[in-house]
Image (cartoon, rainbow, N blue to C red; front, top):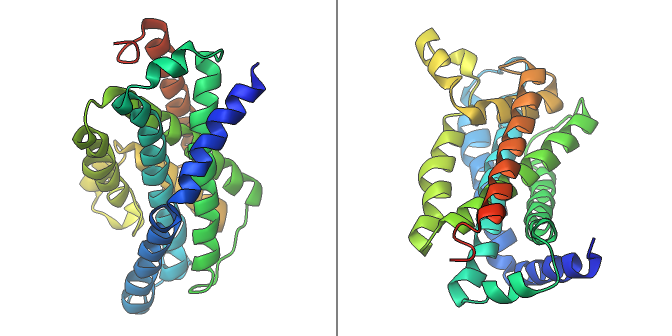
Length: 253
């Protein structure tokens, strides 16, 4: 294992993050704070508790997951797309680092950024609403697994995209709507039976449900299924990336 190579890629990506702190940290934290003000304080006071949890506190895991999914995907996608855009991918591929080490460097940096940002948002949320974490080990496990999984997903998007428009399609047009419809602001048990069934086809539901369970011990679906779905997404992303490097799809062409 070329530790120095991994460290170089990881450090380069973290330096890029530090140079854009206003966009990378301040903007998501400000946006999430506005969600708490609007939904938690203004609207939450008019909504009864959900599953015994005050509405403002109920929002916290969903909003954290919303940020985690979008930021993990965007960070990893841009990280690997930029060398392709500038034509320096060949330098990366000709360096003495294996595909596994490249993935660890890029995905590790993207996941680190998202986890740090998630913890900042958690600390910010605690200023607005009382938060309890009943299962801290599982909260950290879901946080890290989701960050790694969607950083891998973003890595795939960065390889697939051949323009900045495609780079933003998945996070903006698919991932964010699925997250909003996946129980970020409500429990799916509040929906009519037909829409509850439809919602179960949304994979984001399982991630938010499992993450919310780690906070308050309540979930829309069985937590074992949520955890299995998270591992399933991780396995699928790893399989796709293995295939990309094996075939050289859009990375050598």
